Picture 1 (tube, helix red, strand yellow):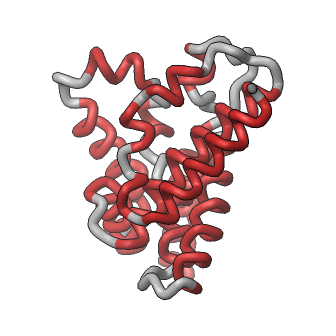
Picture 2 (tube, one colour):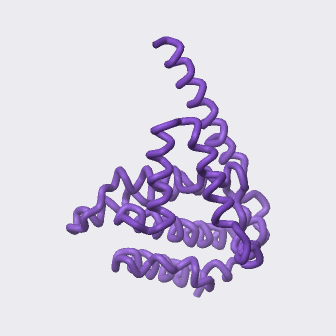
Length: 199
């Protein structure tokens, strides 16, 4: 039994090596548009998880059938594959689109979680929900992912960066807001906030 626990402990640290790597990977889109010291993937993930929990909790109070805890776990793990392939910004994705980018991300994700055995399988199932938008929790995490992106763009703009209009113009950054009126309301409130500071 002791040997089994030691093996399990070793596998946890193999997994955590990838998790920790997310702290070192900058969000490439910000760099592409001139942010000198952009947030890391881990920074983004923390903010998305926080926003996901709040959104899901509000929706549950409004009678929407969603589990805030499951939604938050989906958000916590949604970027794991980037620990192996890095963060690929939208401009680059437009060129890679015809190739196997989605497959590469999926394979990287599978490699990251496989050390955890059944637990890794549970994490992978949540990632698949996120990718397929196949549960209310995944829809909340998806919307929160893009809402947080746009909120970070807004924050960078308040710091003086004036090159981030493409984040607001890109339809892909708004594609998940139609799944619930609250997602759209959050987006519109953020646009109003931005307009009030940039008349």
